[in-house]
Image (cartoon, rainbow, N blue to C red; front, side, top):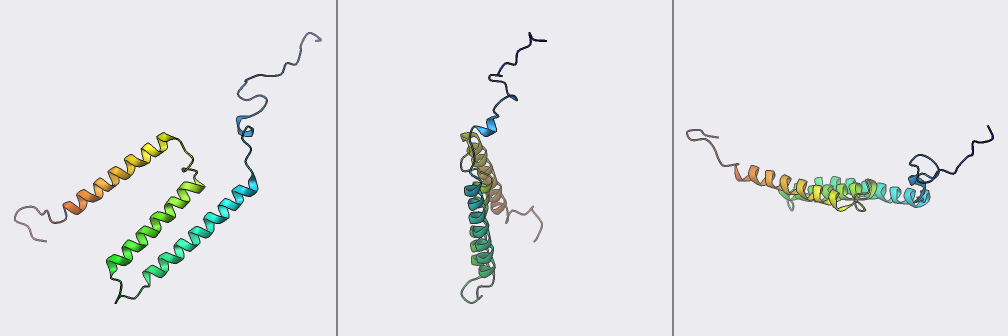
Length: 124
């Protein structure tokens, strides 16, 4: 049994150092980032609630909905960008997100464009 030698594994995927340990993550900075995102989400929800209770004399329903949607989109960007790490992702992720946004805007545009398009002989 003396002929068996223990050899250091080199470039083995599951032996030795893992790829996860090559880039150490500071837990305290990650926790701080999560707390900042949590505070931002709480502030965004509070702003949406305040926007929904704005007086009707100065702000009509459309303005309230527009403000709430802008706040919600900003909130979604913060959560997706920082908690899901999409800000630091590669070009492929951004390309897929751009296509998604383009087709979503196209579908919303087609919906708005077809709102007054009724079949002949019908009334709304």
